[in-house]
Image (cartoon, rainbow, N blue to C red; front, top):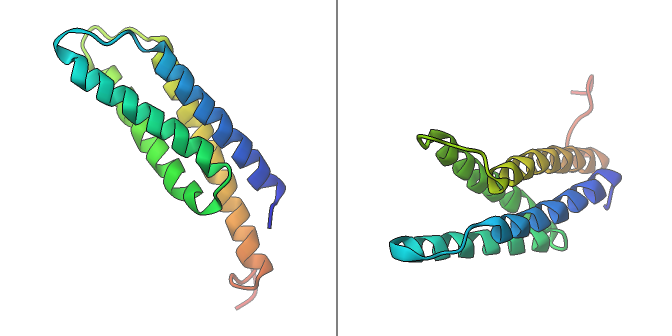
Length: 129
């Protein structure tokens, strides 16, 4: 069943995927001794962006992609805040926006799943036992 909440969640997932691409573009060029780590970080962001955009089409991927995206972006934000001499960058703000969007998408998907379970009679309504 394709509900309004699911449609909004899919739009949010698409926007979060586009935001991950913007984070990828906002990263500084990779060079020096940290080149392999920076390239690996870019690869992981590209995979996350592809997963977010793929979750728009594949319903079964949505919960795992939302959880993975939140974990990835929260890790970046946590590490950035723990750095001495932290100064907010575009990538930091895009990750914060992505986290907020994924939280909203997760809540909407959970709401849609609960409504679907109620519609199919798998979850009792309040007052029924």
